[in-house]
Image 1 (cartoon, rainbow, N blue to C red):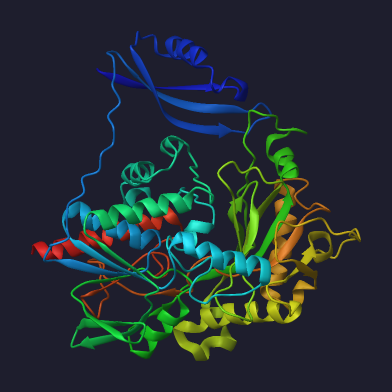
Image 2 (image 1 turned 45 degrees about the vertical axis):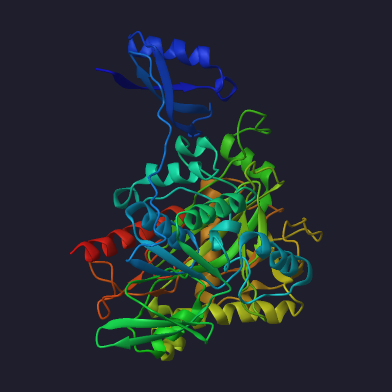
Length: 515
């Protein structure tokens, strides 16, 4: 026996008291040890007294932590290459996997690099100007770059989570993500990390092309043979990973126009709710003030009325609500947090399931019914505000038809807002299910229905409303060179699961090349 795992719990005030930790480990394990290494950390706030749960690995002999050193290969002159559409988490980790196993990645990204992308984010925040190719959804790093950097996933059986986390640390993330139960990087730190990943890909011979939008696909027999970029550059294709993200509606339409099979997929829409962070802390920690030893609290809520679910989505403690439109004359919201999560407000999507049976008025659009439904809501929201990216909001009390105060609380949403009746934005099944959900959430967290809670509408881009089918070998069932990938294709739901999917697609291509 060289090491054993020991679980201890400590108060928040003693989280960094290593001598106490050693004492508790000694008492619990009854072993002498030379070294201890913290492997997992989580907060247990289920009871009135709050603890940190810690998992230590203790070593009988002195232990020297190994430095993670990924094995990358020079692929600049490699015969085999993979073309990748999209430089979001799926596309970037697909490219990293390529240089790990000796395949050259050639990445096309419609948007700009992270540094240049910031100017377009400033334009939409300050002036309501939407750049259709460079915004919160499109650009280097994808939507994940500027929407928080949450790294929690339930897809643990499908991929090597420690490998992905170590790659992120290797490129600049804090080592805390290796041990936290719900790791988080922070929007302020993600751009530098994404830039470092790009540098690695380029250093080892990969290619990344910005301002490069997929505009056409050509097929012969059962094979995708070439792609067109920006309507004027054609590239022959052996293997194409399509990792475009959930908002690449033009790509969905392109596939549909080319008679490439795509399917409708269930998704969710709703609102983004914002509370003072102090109120959420009080609800979750049972304290008037969380103090200096606990992080800003988060929540996860779900309610099912027997017909459909309503649930919290992408909860951002100490966060900010952002304008995430990808076209003019539409309103879309999302949220993000900086690494310290130290803004005064907490926000979360509260969204309702949308199924094929809900969209009878949109069935004429076939598998694009969900896209058109999303667009209809985003358009209504824009028409109500009619002023750039100013969005419609409503006090939760008023939404629930309760007495509400006349003075609006402040909002973290920078472009501004206008009071509106949100029943004019959503169809009745969304509106009524949201009401049921909020009433249920208040039973679970008494005080969730707060006079300071403000609803921002709409939250429509929770996931892709389309699934691009693929078989067990990860390629499209009709075209063996086309590999639908990540969140846009309907196979991921966040940074980690998208990264996992990008890696799995490359591994599938590698098997084809070897055979």
